[in-house]
Length: 87
Length: 270
Image (cartoon, rainbow over all chains, first blue to last red; front, side):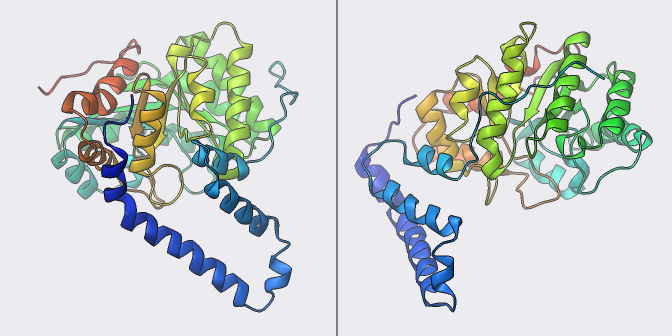
């Protein structure tokens, strides 16, 4: 089901909302950086993942949301042990 | 526009919510059994809960003109208690002839543990044995992708499973194709913070199409909005979709899935 709006129409609708959300992210990063203990948090896996999301956002791929979701996901092992018969 | 909320926990909501949903156009809802915010201690607690779902909530809903349907199970969050889970699974058939029961659900995984997988598998056995539809909860946040893959593995391992009789719920950008590529129905939950926003849900519909997909509020005792489905209707209108396209997602699709239940009787309000 392809989108029926043009890119121009979408941008007109979402610009202020995107601007607000990006500002929230920017302000949160600034708050982290100026807080005591910022150096230690830099090694926190969550902080590193957030940094990686910024690279994904800056990319030209068409599935940024899916990539972000996978970045924040646990690893799946296809050889996981399936349930057995009922005890 | 008339709509159906295919997943909402009305035992946690007020009569005001029922009235507000009716005013917004809700004509039917389905309420899966879930974790009520604390672990229950005995099978009798579940028997009472299933009576509430099959006797009391249909009356509350009918008072405002909404048809109420339900699903029965012990949810994944309580599945770590394997002996209690087995007692509940053994008791569920007592309620399977109640007129508003659509099937077994919402079963699934929460933290993707061995016990959860075992109890999921035993619920699946019950659904197959009794020829019931299956409604599946997928985990939250970081657990979702792994858990959804594990659930699909278990479903595909059993050749008796008919994908068109299974609904995989709470899909997002990274799990929608995992469910749809194997022919399962799927649903997106519209939540204020986690899961999907209405705009992301419409994005997903634009990317994967509007077949075998539906949306719900999953309204419960946590942060949630029982009138989230009308928010999606509004988002689709804002983007220029026809009323027929919107109706397919919020009305026709849930009906198509529910109609596979042998007990499903729906009074079309139109």
